[in-house]
Structure formats: C-alpha cells, structure tokens
Image 1 (tube, one colour):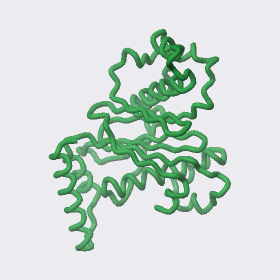
Image 2 (spheres, one colour):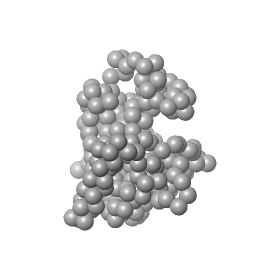
Image 3 (cartoon, one colour):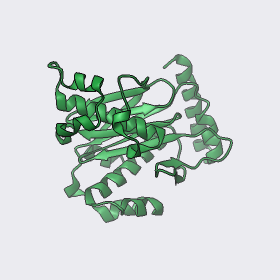
Length: 253
C-alpha cells in the first residue's frame, strides 16, 4: 500500500482519538464517512486456529452476543455453534481494533442467505464474510465485495475430484510435483470463496468455476493443515493478516 493510504489512516485514527478524548461519540454515518476516505482497498483477514471445543462455556459465550446472533448460533450443532460465536467475535475484534469502529452495524441477509451490514443509503458499504471448519474460524473484511473459505486438507476426498476440478485443474492436481490433496483443497477454497464473493455460495456448481481461466483477485494461505482463500471483487488482493491461537484470542476479548 502507498504512503497516501497510511497518511489517511493515521488522520482517521487521530480524529477518532480526538473524539474519544472529548468523551464524544462518532455516529455510524460519520464513522463510515471517515473509513471510506481510504483510496486503497481495505482487506483484512483474521484467523483463529486450534480451537478447543471442550473448554468452552457456550451459555456464557452466547450471552456475549446480540440477540439476533444468539438465535443464529443456536441453529448449529455444538462445534459449529462455537465456531459461529468465535466468527462474530473475530469480526467484532477486527471492526473495533483495525477500523476503529466501536459498534458493529446491524446484519441483514441476501436472498441466498449471505449476511451483510445494513448501511444507510448514500454510504459506501463495508463487506465481510465468515467461514469455519472443525478447529478453525476465518473472517474477511473489505470495502469491496469479499468471500472467504477455509478447509482442512485431511477432509479432502479425492474420489470426488472429477465433480469440481476442470481439465486444467485436474492436470495440476495430478502432476508429480504436487501434493494432490493439498492442491485440490486449495483450489476448492478458491472456488468456494469466489462463489461466496458473488453471493451465491454452493448453489452454483464448483465445476463451472475454472480457476485457471478466471482473473481472480484472490489470496490463498496455508496454515498448518488448513487452506484459506479469499476473493475480493476489486482492489489490491494484498491484505493484513491476523492469526490467533484459540487461547490467545480468548484473552483479547
């Protein structure tokens, strides 16, 4: 990112601190107006890994969420309920600490069930996306449409590769220089994050998303046994990446 980005960010942070020092509160409109002054893309990824589900107090964790998020989390089985709670708290952490916004805007949902922030008409939007698998939760935040996916390499079933890999992708996965399960997992996350960025998710066919031919604004990260991929609609796909161990993240909250 260029020097102008950091100068503008410093100016916004200074303005926020000035209001804090005066015990004044920035309303949502003013906060969003400050944030969208950034010319460069806002693209932040957060990761919480090695989640220990046996040590969680679900009832206490649920009460820390807004009521609508409590209802959403309770739709899931135990582990995914925990993942949903961590996903929201990670999103909240990024919004508050990386963007200096004190309160997460209210959620709404698209026709396909993708959550988004309800922003007043006339303001540019702030986008986010959340994904989780057993043991890992990831969040992406951007001022461009964004999708993210995380998958565990151990869970990749190569017997179904014909169902989601194009001919070009298949050649790459099957090449001698490649770890087939790892590469197939990476491609899967690229495809799913692209569809989530579009807003359709797996309603569209993964096979029809050919990563060899699409001009993707994407980033892929391999962390331990996980592949994480994120796609943004426009802007620079370089990002700020924050990785937390489960216990470390709990201490931040």
